[in-house]
Amino acid sequence: MTTIDIKVPDIGDFKEVEVIEVMVKAGDTIKLDQSLLTVESDKASMEIPSSHAGVVKEVKAKLGDKIAEGSIILVLEVSDADNAVSTPTPVTTEEQTSSPTANVSLASGSEAQHPSSQNTDTVQPSTTQHIATPSSNNKAHASPSIRKFARELGVDLNRVAGSGPKARITISDVQNFVKGVMQAPASPNASSANGTGNGLNVLAWPSLDFSKFGATETVALSRIKKLSGPNLHRNWVMIPHVTQFDESDITELEEFRKSSNAALAKSGVKLTMLAFVIKASVTALKKFNAFNSSLDAAGENLIIKQYYNIGFAADTPNGLVVPVIKQADQKSLSQIANEMSELSAQAREGKLKPTDMQGATFTISSLGGIGGTAFTPIINAPEVAILGLSKSSIKPIWDGAQFEPRLMLPLSLSYDHRVIDGAMAARFTAYLAEVLTDLRKTLL
Image (cartoon, rainbow, N blue to C red; front, side):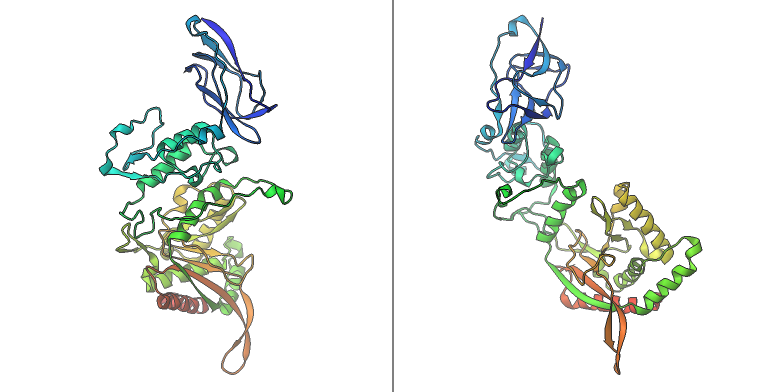
């Protein structure tokens, strides 16, 4: 046995490249020309193959290192029989993506496997559904090995959200994308009645070199935005949104809120307007139960919920999250206010548990503390409606004899038009406005 150093071969005009993926570890048995690293320049990604077969004794390069031609990648233990030197050529992203794409179908409900272990011969046509064949993966941020993996599965990388450094797409991202497609309800038209299909035929996203127009800066999206973005896009595209706007006179309610906070000051409880709106919304949901429902997977039945879990959008440094007040109908204003305060603090600290953000039947997004007069909130599927609150303001309101200054709260109700029609939405907001004007209606 002989120990040799595996070095970076000729990589062209690049002086230094960054290691963005390490594909082997100490103890691995590797083959001749097997990919060891993926490196990236300002122009392309490339894989560095091994010039020998053998067993990895030590990996010298690590993620984020800057390496150049002649840099030692790893120490390899080889047998004399395998000690024939080969001159490997790095394979660039552009070379890899020029290969023909494959439209491979997977057995329905099966998990994505690495191409080295996948047996596509066992796939039965009668139990398959296809993942859209990519027209081009060049815009996606992924290494050549990931691109090859995606091509063999027929996955369009432009539709996959990357979770790696600099939003780089990993094998797990591709596998999770495949799982999501396979778990989505199928129909002959590739689009179910509940809007979960992927049959949209849209133009490719425009690709521009913005730097030619002026200075630019690239800032990675936060993890929350990467996760919420695809959901928001799906909800906006798949749900026929309509937004009903209204106003509620909260003059007396605001006075009551202030006086209650003064009385509760020693207890540490602070009532916010949102706590009152949550309580009033439960009353409205009980009267108009279609707003507290979801469509079933086939889009043929309405599931009316007998519980009232209210989600509220919480602003954090990394983006919006939606904690849920469970069983809001069974809690007092003080309990709701305390729970909101605790959940909001956990959200800002990134300590919310998944269960804290699940099970909502109706959501409220309040921008009242920031400003604005109205907006169109996006429904949080599988809910069928969402209420938006904007900043309240003093307006002159005619009382039949004269104009009086009244504090008016703008309401923006977005609803799923498949479930709710305009008349029902108008009645809902009108009733909610009445309840907020006179909270005694919650006792009826």
